[in-house]
Image (cartoon, rainbow, N blue to C red; front, side):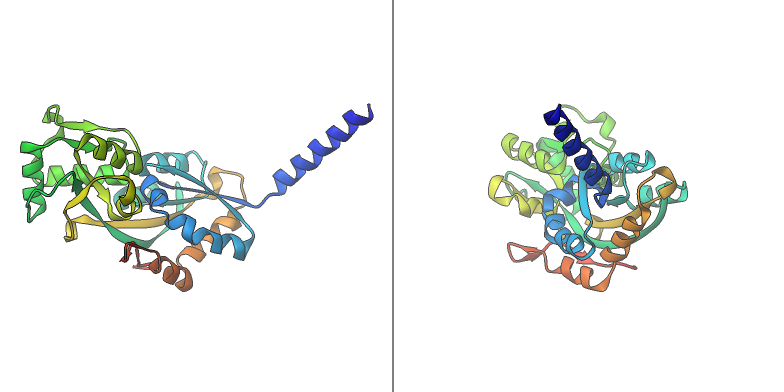
Length: 261
């Protein structure tokens, strides 16, 4: 009896401590998580506010769905039109730009192209391509580019395959299969030592990769919305924006802050 009473007391205390734990649920993209940026900046938030940040990494489409279900406090995503629609439909309370980087085309070797149009043409006529196929921000951008230059992915044959995976897994599969794919630069550089892929096209306005922060409508859940307000204000704050700018891999700044733009 005495032992049972002690065990019940321990369980009771553990339950109380779990319930009182300050926790914020941030749902983000696999590309942003894979980049290493969050692991770099989040300790600053946790130390300042004493709030543990639970990060869930999904494609942007799935992240927005979690927000709609109230399973997130904050979203960090990169599909602007979908983000605006999310807020306009009442699922998000507010949204802001926070930073940007860029997308790049990568593959097992260079293909001597000078434009996106030429890149898509050469790949579609000569090589195999991996699409994420997961309704993520990267997938949305890729589909937009094909459509913008007159292609219909529904007509593509066996050279075009979908991984249904996050950015890190897709890059690994692309490297092993010697395919081509579209990726964000940050995830590519964070994995460079483990993949055998080179940049085949980069640096043009159409490949800009904008990230936004959204505070999920607190009416969709029963968690402490003050924590979300703390995080939202923190990530657009000048000192945090400066911290984002200091995240560098291979002598390359991976993200460029633009909160308020």
